[in-house]
Image 1 (cartoon, rainbow, N blue to C red):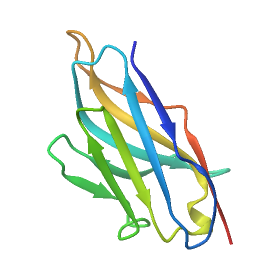
Image 2 (cartoon, rainbow, N blue to C red; image 1 turned 180 degrees about the vertical axis):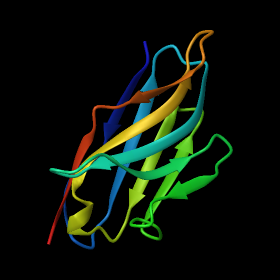
Image 3 (spheres, helix red, strand yellow; image 1 turned 135 degrees about the vertical axis):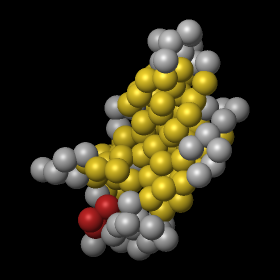
Image 4 (cartoon, rainbow, N blue to C red; image 1 turned 90 degrees about the vertical axis):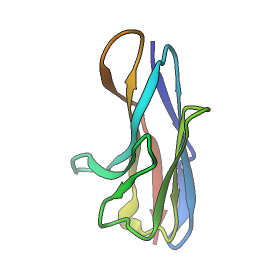
Length: 120
């Protein structure tokens, strides 16, 4: 059974930094795209950043130049370095991995989320 666990959230002052981590565990044959999404209070979940197995990254316009996504394939982990944080970055952050387990096709798995709160 595949599980994703996020960590690194917390309370930070505007302009500060946080680094989120997401670790996958379980019966994993391969991981393609890793990504981060977020959901602010009263809003829908939105895309933040993705990174392919080959290292190609993609970012939402709202975080470009401030956030950096990276991955460690050996450890089955993804990271999100968040700098120059703004109050509007406050949200629950979720990681999403596309994972192949056993002999099946690649499927999307989600973590349970980690809360990031940015004070003004």
